[in-house]
Image (cartoon, rainbow, N blue to C red; front, top):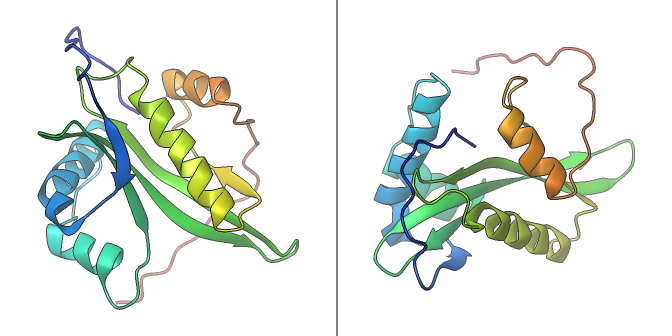
Length: 162
């Protein structure tokens, strides 16, 4: 979730929350880059990588888009997770983004609601999300959507494989 500017556009009369399609890849790629830039993260994403990970031989993620009929104004990316000690499936709401000017109209809430439905239908026992420590607007948003804060314990490590 990013901070909104003073721009507020009228809410489109119809916004459809749906699964991403191949034709959405350029706009989806652009929105992911916008979110990365907001967090001062490099954006190495490309439409080709998205196609591989959404529609390839071994899909790795799923994506929802908020479609006005003429353009995409938001997206959510979902990634399956598993708690082996409990034998519990979960879904991580890895990204949630609504374009500047369209925030505050309930688009993010609709994306989260649809993500919750998808997680339930996949047999998941929980939906998780994270937000940067200082992103208090995101914290309030998620808490209003009935997410419960969970303290982070320990360190998380990564190892490059290539």
